[in-house]
Image (cartoon, rainbow, N blue to C red):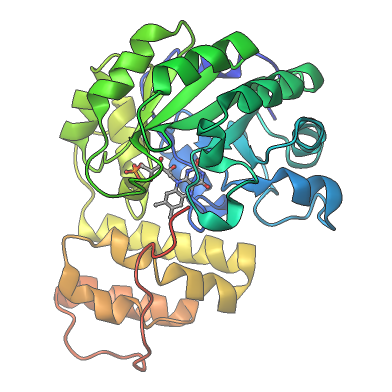
Length: 335
Ligand SMILES: Cc1cc2nc3c(=O)[nH]c(=O)nc-3n(C[C@H](O)[C@H](O)[C@H](O)COP(=O)(O)O)c2cc1C
């Protein structure tokens, strides 16, 4: 497992895209599929530093634990206290084999208000002390992921402060916290941040296809991060890396969708893993919305296999061979 400073610089020496941290999505199975397709690195779902330090959690924590052989995975922590983040970083490194540690400064969810996340954009001087404290205790890169601001754009000032505090890389999601996920990510503002600091800046927001990804790669950022657009589309990482120039066929999509379901069943157990797949499977066939109903009903690996065989063989949703159950909609809770 990689555990040395300079991780980001090494990974940025080739073209490609980065898998975004996404609570409820960027788990071990999704990270594995993204890494296999050549993602520059992947970032875990955010983990509470307090939970690591003061809670009952240990090396088995599902959202922290790496899959066998995982490398190039950044662990993202949230919190607001320097001593807790320092100790949390130490544990994330020794327990989870983090390649680098990232500080969450973008989560707008009220339940973590006052405990870090995007609130740090209101008091960035606190974030600077957090980054310095983390830097002091771990021998790996420390980075931060910010939004453009809390309710007004101040990303340049914040990024410069983070750089001075020792951040090795800054990721910018091109929205303010009050915008949450509405409107469009402002890539001009992201480019402005990239031009104003010397450390690499990764841009995030609304990249869902190859033409957009290529355009964003030319915007002045060191790399492009992909979140929602990678759900059911790990091939985007191979396309970004320049190792794939076609779109997958339905048969290839079905093969990988089944593999994703198998990895989920292995990681979480079949029941929980397959329930979680309901929000992911339709993403593999976003161009076939009529297949959705059949895909969100599957609750066993056998049902996934049958549904995929039937859909890809006939090309239609047709008669369903699995019992109807209500489906889960995509990404209702967005930190
Ligand atoms: C369901 C969901 C969960 C997210 N969880 C996190 C998180 O844990 N940490 C974080 O920094 N950003 C999180 N984000 C923000 C993404 O990393 C990303 O910046 C944002 O979605 C914009 O990129 P996209 O349009 O490519 O999805 C989350 C976004 C979504 C949709």
